[in-house]
Amino acid sequence: MFKIFKLSLIQARWLGMLIAISSIAFLAAACGSSATPSADLVAASGNLPATSAPVAVDTQAPTSASPSSDSAEACNLLKKDDVSKVLGAPVDSAVASGLGGVCTYTSKNLSIEFTIAGHTGGAKAMATQLQRLGDLAQVVPGLGDQAFYNTNSALASPLFLLKGDAEFLFSMSDTTYQPLDPAMVQATEKALAQQLLINLQ
Image 1 (cartoon, rainbow, N blue to C red):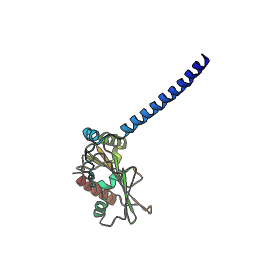
Image 2 (image 1 turned 90 degrees about the horizontal axis):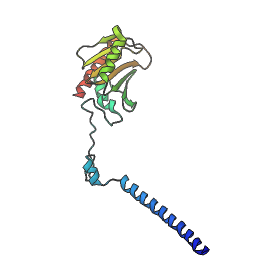
Image 3 (image 1 turned 90 degrees about the vertical axis):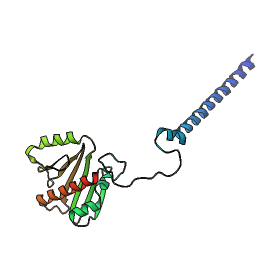
């Protein structure tokens, strides 16, 4: 009787271990199959073609102010050559930062920052800024859907631009901390904004 009981305990332990191992193997197989969906399943979802042929990637600048996966989006929307054309001088560098939302261009002692302030919510943000600035906002008629200079800024009159519901910002400074002529700054920022609007068409 004691031997039968002892044998049953051993058998029960082995049975439990077999069940546990089978469960782990089953879960591993299930996870392995779900981690890599078949080509047919991916194709059915509309994300990728069923073939293994390489997918072409468009490296051109976006034609509208819509979100982009490009890590240097601002530098693609307003290219180095665009800024060089506006300045009438070579641009030494164009560096993206802020997950692609800012591009800083340098030309001799000039530094120009172009910022994608937001793809949506721009109209509301601009209205709030205009209300806050009051008479210190210098409206620029006929530029985009709305534009103004912030004449109360420590920088020389940065330009805010609205296109659709996207908001953009242009600012200039001297890398040697010399004061810049506000009229020159405003004219340059406006020309850069006009070039951006052409690029967005």
